[in-house]
Structure formats: C-alpha cells, structure tokens
Length: 98
Image 1 (cartoon, rainbow, N blue to C red):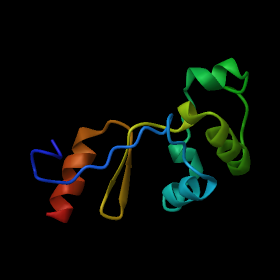
Image 2 (cartoon, rainbow, N blue to C red; image 1 turned 45 degrees about the vertical axis):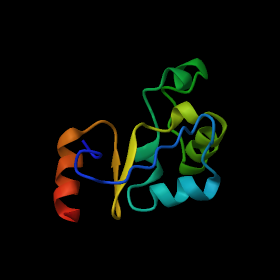
Image 3 (cartoon, one colour; image 1 turned 90 degrees about the horizontal axis):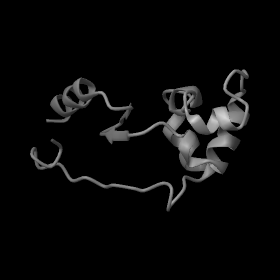
C-alpha cells in the first residue's frame, strides 16, 4: 500500500539490526514504552514474566535483550508512530501527510 502511493519505505529487520537504548526511547517518547512492548509475546511467557508487572526500565532492558518483545510492525509516517497491523490507522496517517 505504501509503495502504491509512491511513499519511500525503509524496512529494518531488528533481529539482525537490533534497536539501541536510545532508539527504543525515541520510538516510545510519544506513546510510552508499554505501547511498544509485546506483552503477549511467547518469549515473555518462556521467561516466566507474562503475569509480572514490569517497570519501564525492565521493559526497556528486556526489549534490548530480546527483540521479539518489541511489537511489530512499527511504522513511522511523518511524526506519527503506528504500532501493530492496523490498516485503518496507516491509511489515516497517509491521508494526513498527503
């Protein structure tokens, strides 16, 4: 869809190129770390942490160690960060930027 509308797309495999501490903080600046943290990830269950209340610093540390704990996809359109596969949100953001 993005390519059909002539938007340039930058794709990043963050299993091969993990996020840094600063990048995760920047991504979460407007939405909060809990929004980009994959609370339902099987990886979190394997760690025995699925039911544990985690602080922001704990979530950040876990996402740095285990990229599967970062929700996917993350799509930045303009200054907006869209989290998860929400086609309507992507379409609305595309309308805003033209």
